Structure formats: C-alpha cells, structure tokens
Length: 402
Ligand code: GLN
Image 1 (cartoon, rainbow, N blue to C red):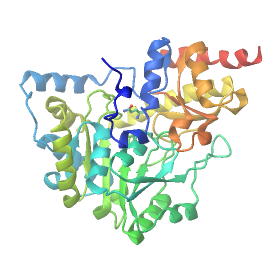
Image 2: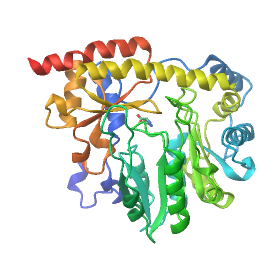
Image 3: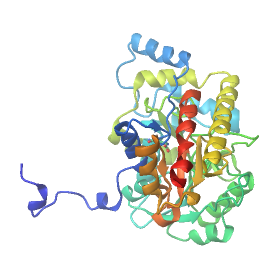
Image 4: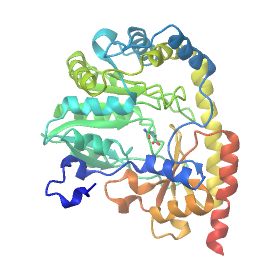
C-alpha cells in the first residue's frame, strides 16, 4: 500500500497534531519490552477484592449482559449518590445528576466536550495528569496552566501563588480542573485552597471540574474535601470519580460524573454517542463495591501508606530527592543529583539498564524543561515488587559513580 505521505491529502484532522501519545501508557509498553518492573503507569499488580470479583461473576451469570441504561445502571447511580451524601454531605439526585462512563477518563473528556466552546480556556494546575491537556484541546479549549511549586524540604507541601491563580481567570475562562488528591504530586488540597478556587469560580462565573479518583488514598491524617461540598459550589461543580483506584480494577473502565442536572443532560448526550454505556455487569459489581464497610477504605489507605513508606526510603537511599505524597499512590522525585541531561535520558537508562520503568517528569508539564529533572514512580504494587524495585534502584548511584 502506498505511503499516505505521497498523497496530497494527509487525511488527518488538525486537532490530532496538537498532542502526542500518552507517555504514561508508552512507559508500560517499554517496561514490557525490557522486562522491567513497571512503576510507571498507576495500576495495582495485586488482586482486586474477592467480593467485588464475585459480584461481577454473579452479574454475568445472572445475564446482566446487555446494555445498561446509557447513563448508568440504577443500582450503581444510587450507590454513588448515597456515598457522596454520606461521606461529603452533598445531596445528589441519582436520576438527574449522575452519569456512569467508561472510566473517569471518559467522564473527564465527556464533561469537557459538554461544556467547552472553541476559544474557552480551562485552568489546570501544573504538573498535571497528562490527559487534561489533550482533553482540553479535543474539546476546543485552550489549557491555561498555574504552577504548583515543589516543597523546599522532604516534608513540605506543594503550593501555588494566589496571584498567579487569580491572573489565570478572565472572561474566556470556562472551567478549572482540580485533581485532589493530586497526580503526580500527591498534594491534597486544603479547605483554604479549595475556598480560594471557589471564590474565583464564583467571581468569574466558572465551573470546577474536580477529579477525585484518589479520594480514599490519604496519608498522615490528611482529609479529602469534595469541591461540591463547599458552599456555593454545588451548581458549578462536576465531580469526576471511578472504581479503578478505590477497588483496584483499572481495567474495568467504570467511572462517573456528578453534576448539576442541566450539565448532566449535556454530559449524558456526549457520553451516549461516544460509548453508549459502561460495561453492564461491572456496573452491578460497582453497586456492591460502593457499599463495602468503612473498614475497607481504612485498610486501603493503610496498605498504600505502608507501600509509600517502603518505596520512598529506598528511592532516597538510591539518591533521589522525594517529595512525600499526602495522598494518591505516586511519588514525584528530583533526579538532579544523578547528572543526567534530562528525564527522558534518565528514564531510558532506568528501564533498559536498571530494569525499572518510571514516568519522565516532562510529561506532566507544558514546557518539557520544567520537568526535565523530575521522575514519577507509582507504588501501587505488591511488597515483593517494591522490594525487587528497591534492589534494582540501589544500583543507580553505583552505576553513576563508576
Ligand atoms: N492514572 C494513571 C497514571 O497516572 C494511569 C491512568 C491511565 O493510564 N489511564 O499512571
């Protein structure tokens, strides 16, 4: 077949020229290629809870095998509404405000497609989960970045400059994306910080789209606060969440949005024509997962605290400077001590010679230079995986010294 390049028409849309493939997903492919330990993409390598798997098997056995209602099985929507009401005090009508999507990835892009026009701007804290950039571009909006500054010492917090945040808001601003607990930094936004965002959203008549997928993964007594629970935000918040991280089922692709009814109508239209619906039997399993006792969530967070406290000292001993996460299951590190020209060279060395895959920091920044001395590790892995990774990582410094 003739190469497309020789045709006058190249057939590709202009929008796909403005972003690249996901680096996170690429690093998983690299890990497989080099038979390396995958601390790149954030998915667990341990089993999902038995009762959730059983619920999925039973749903398939009971022939829940045809389309669910486009915007989600009633049982799951009911459980979602009940959970946010119980945990965050936010009253939600499951008939009018919940849309079940194929993962929070689809929830996010369906939301942006439902609310953005060409020329709108979307404010995003940077470093940011890489999907938000392409999601904004695909929906016609322009991302506008506000810096999260790394902590000065290992125990400190990532912070932002209030003036810089205010300066990002103006008449073309449609929405701000807030991801708390945050990927990749592990920052958990405080009430005061969320109130600052709230005040700007109200003043400039802007929506808050909050990705709360790590809401249950918290350390050191930090608390998750839903943006929708803040006074004045219920009518302008779209909460994005899903089963993947909370129930260790990233491959199930079950996520959702919670939004005011008029915005939900728009999200449901987009979602319907994009995917029709999320997997029906897995939604039934989701309804039982969301009703697990609170001890499940305590154990989940404690398990990840243990893993964090296993990986971070190993990275520190190997010569990384770690920014201690307060939530989510990633640790951002500074690699400047190793003297590599950039993060891409470093992660290539790491995956091919040390046998550990990580995500280059530049993939979380608009300007690659800002992340060229940073690398992100995921610690949602079994003890033995983290032990083996630690053993391999201890060779990094030795390799540099020799
Ligand atoms: N959230 C995960 C990460 O940051 C990956 C999610 C995905 O690849 N869809 O690694």
